[in-house]
Image: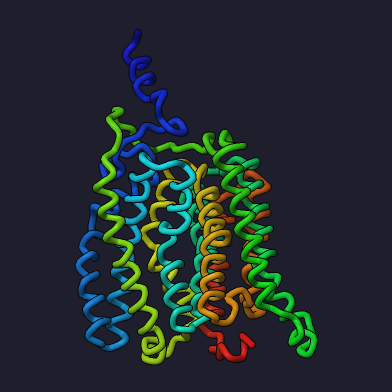
Length: 407
């Protein structure tokens, strides 16, 4: 047998691997999945230095330092914590069921959105919780997706991707978006006297239940009935190392156990100092929670998605973006809505008109591109440009009091 044939066979996945990818610790530089290999490289690089800000930010919040310092320290501290949580969840996937793995990625993998949502509701800041969730979805659908298209296709005539899979995922995203906006539609299109007679809280709870059902169907589709669609996702650019024994789960479990309370504390102090930071910088709270927090908090995750999509030549970016948006819409948003129900705070599923229009347009644009099955770098630049325009509009938009939005 020739040397090239031996090399080709050495790269074939082992029979006992999951989805054709060998099981091995994701903390290593050589990883079974290119996304987590890139995340590992980021965590082991300069980003680790930001971990020093975690105790400093928590101490600053406890001692009552200036709001500017508390907010910035805790926001910067969340960045490495989220990256290490993502890496730990991925390594634990070797010792948990696929369902538990997916639920971990949907909840703890979106620690910024979940933490800010819970902390904001605990302080009765409904619009801050809304903005963080909506801002993350907009960031994925416009900035991240556009960046993937640009960096993967700037030297190519076009980029091709799996139209069947992305079409199904984008259709589910559109259905979730419509469900999310039903309570808002009642508020927008009903006369005030008619709207006053509608139990909007029950509509919100019903919407959250439907979203949970859609999540269950999505998990069934992904993990049981149509797993072949997701196995076909390319993981080009990954560096495979020899098959080794099963991962010891204690190391990532310890990292995850330490990261969860740290993220919770940093998120709580960040939200508690948000009002003072907004007044000091003269930036609206809505803009900070909708743009700055999702963009900075998920910066390492965004960088990993774009880098891997460049290595995969545009094959994985749109799928990763839609799946991340679906996890927020189908699980994180309903969880925050039910938490509001428990805490007896106003509904979190009634957005204002401008937020609603921007959100639905972004989802429709993503759905249109997903069903085409091809794109190019110019369309990526258009998405990035659209995000910049949206950011400018939110920045210049006057702050709207919450007592006007939520009746």
